[in-house]
Length: 128
Image (cartoon, rainbow, N blue to C red; front, side, top):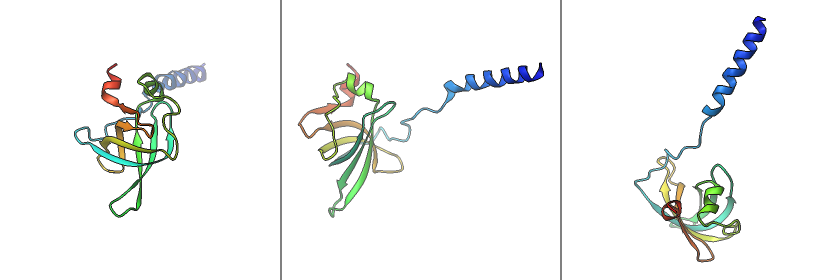
C-alpha cells in the first residue's frame, strides 16, 4: 500500500511541475536600443514557439559576421502578414531589432525589409 501511495505522490508531483517548464524569454534583449543590419539569409526557422533567422552581415572591412535574429512564433507571424515563402536562404534583407545585452550579434526582430520589397514591422503588426 505504501508503494502505491508513494507512486501516486510522485505522479502528482510530476504533473504539477509540467506547466512550470521554462519559457523562452526576451529579457536578454535591450528594448531601449535599436540596431539595423543588412545581410544575406543563411537559414530561416519558421517555427513555434519562436522563429529565427541566421544572417551573414559584412562588417566595416567586408568580413562576414554571423547574426542570429530571433522573432515571434510562426503562428503569430502568419497572423500578422508573413507567408511561408517570404524569406529563404540567399535573400538579401535589411533588419532592425533590439540587440542582446551581451552578444551584439543577437537581435530581436522589430522590422524587416524583404528581398521582394515587402516590409514587416512588429509593433503595428502585433497591434492588429
